[in-house]
Image (cartoon, rainbow, N blue to C red; front, side):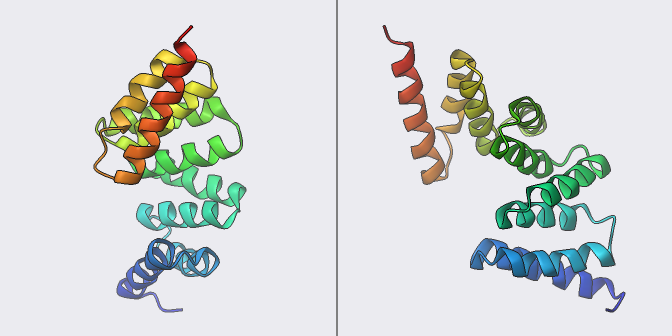
Length: 162
């Protein structure tokens, strides 16, 4: 393997392409691991690897990479967002909530972070606070997220009605 920075960037870009466009998570993990090996301090490479690991089902590996990314760059919204998602999948709701809250603090207009926080708050029985965050998520420019958030708001409002 070469130590050329452009090669590492190419591996990162190709890994992201495999995740985003091809949904080929195992192959993406291979390329992204190589990118991290070439540049261990690359937060984008670690975040992308953590995300690909989570999508491939390796939640332990995802947590390891994403926690390293958060330690290296505590202001990385996506690292917090993806880590929260992994913790939520594991039903580790307090940890998920902590990272969703951090993502919202870092990027108050991040609709996906609001949706995740709203979902966790709903699971924790905090319906009123959940509704606030889900209402924010329902303003997303992403039609799929907007539709899911609107449905979640309707369901939670139904729980509040006598």
